[in-house]
Image (cartoon, rainbow, N blue to C red; front, side, top):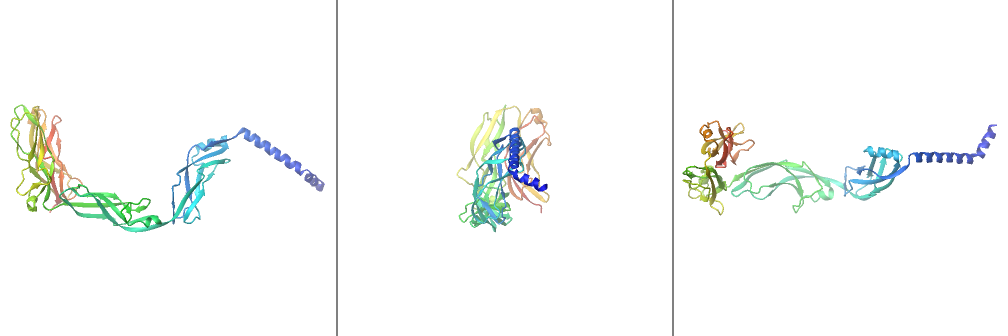
Length: 411
């Protein structure tokens, strides 16, 4: 009985297979009709991943950062492809590749099924695998420009003194050293900065495509005025008063700071931190004054540069109310263990406002100061600042506009 049944099944096997295939085709047709495939561009560019990288090799070449895809998938699947960011991944696999030139096809994988890749743009990428090299170099400075006239470099320190350069072996082989570039053009004060390190070849050209560790170095450069040179502020010396009913509104001088020189350095060193102009007579002045003035210099001292005079401008205006007062200059922000010497110690201030307010000003109503917070020991030229409490009073000018501040450790 069983043998007979098996014989009948064998004789009708072709018919059964055909019937099953027909039923499967009908089912597939029904599914496709209900959820047809659509061919579309993937809704966003895909980043290109690199898999299987050997740490001893570096990939050289301009790989595309993103690729474009065209896919075929059921309509229901496109909703998921659009909403899930990592639904599709594009990559190349460099596992097992040795140093040299290579071309690989871009592969695509997805956690969603079913879908078919119609087009990849680009389809393949070319690149070079090169051995990775690491070398250590001493860090040296490369100064650009020159300090201001009369200044010279006193000391330069760099931290750290060594740096490690890594990258493609052919490029690392071109490295002659690691430099810290520093622009000192017209510098008058010490420089403290963190500067990015650069790798250079034997011709001094900066090389790119390398990694430098650490990436920056701390640089401290101190300047020293050369013997016989000194920078001082210019103080405009005036005598007399404007005509009745007129007032001084502003006193300005250009340049506000000059460099003096003497063949005898002791003479220059003995000067105060400012130099006066020859007196300018304001008697009966009724309008603005603009005039060149010579400086009152000791014998044997000259102004560095072709121009020996300074340009002085005096603002004269009808009196609202203004006065020229002299105030002591305070020092703010001086670190513990340091002291500061000012030259000059007081400045002339032109202030205006209601006459009654000016006449009632007390010693605490106006404050002149220089801020030295964070400044290193040494000589600095700083602009004084004013703090005036009565709101009706306005500051018109401060002369001299700069004060020499010498910061040093307390003995």
